[in-house]
Amino acid sequence: MKKFLFITTLLLALSMLLVACGDDGKTDTASEGEGEKAPEFLSMLTGGTSGTYYPLGGEMASIITDETGIQTDAISSNASADNVISLQEEEAQLAFVQTDVTANAIEGINSFEGNPVDNVLAIGSLYPETIQIVTTKDSGIESVEDLKGKTVSVGAPGSGTYVNAEQILKVHGISMDDIDAQNLDFGESTGGIQDGNIDAAFITSGTPTGAVEGLSATTDVSIVPISQDKIDELVKEYPYYATDVIKAGTYGLEEDVTTVAVLAMLAVTDSLSEDVVYDITKAIFENTDKITHAKGEYVTKESALDGIGIDLHPGAKKYFKEIGVLE
Image (cartoon, rainbow, N blue to C red; front, side, top):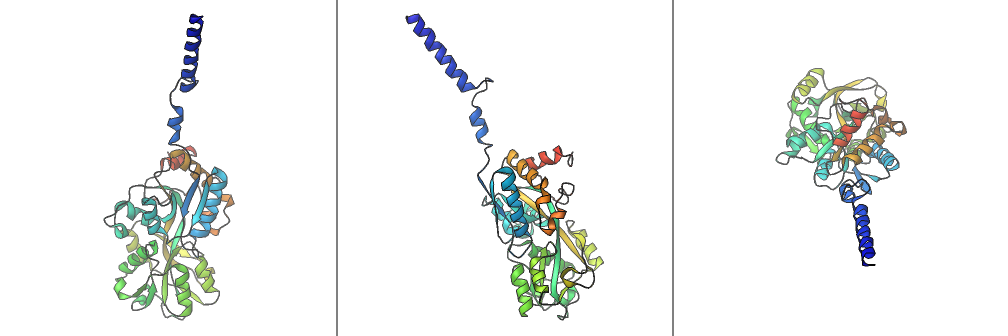
């Protein structure tokens, strides 16, 4: 009887050991997978409600929610520079940012002087962001040089628009001290132009921009061109810029207007796992047909690696390698 009890006890102990180890003999598989557990919620920072980031971000957040099962919310913000800081401080997981601003953040220059960011990675670029110097036809402002002495909105504090304005003014021999600079968001900028409180505004956003379209409904809008020699000078010093054209008919413009653009991109904190970011990347770039916003046509697998300027997240890298965009 004692022998039987001993054998029974031994078999029970062995069976418990096998259960703990798993059928494949590996130990502690549950703890190995804990670090890869997908979050229940994600915050995606966008921009002001009258720009492009917010409505486009709302559509992308819905796609991520539907395709991954992770509730993703698009949140209005002051845009690029502030968004990068929020990612750095782990206040959000995803954000719309300008490629130039993110490159500055990683290098620790311009707005990020003395505060380089080391935890932000790329998912992919999305569409060109056009630098639009908006004014009215009767303002008398026909060139960047004409902005001297004028009241000009240069973007919300912490925005990439401010950096763009500063750099464009610089290549024209103008500093912020040469203008009456106002730190306004897009809606405030166009409202100020309409009310006559400001003369012009720098707006970095995909065209057509909602706030400028709203202004054009009541006011004859003019976009200040940038000459090709100044564009060449700008690109030489800041390679993330590219020539862009605002087509005639946009905002009621009678002619094409030559200007410059940077790229909008989606960035992510490195605290998200490879699997989660792979799923997010796949959700976006496999479902671009579900994006109804006008900028959706620019969001493609083929152009997703254009001009990003920073390292890809391993999850995004896995996806782009899988579809053959990245070797």
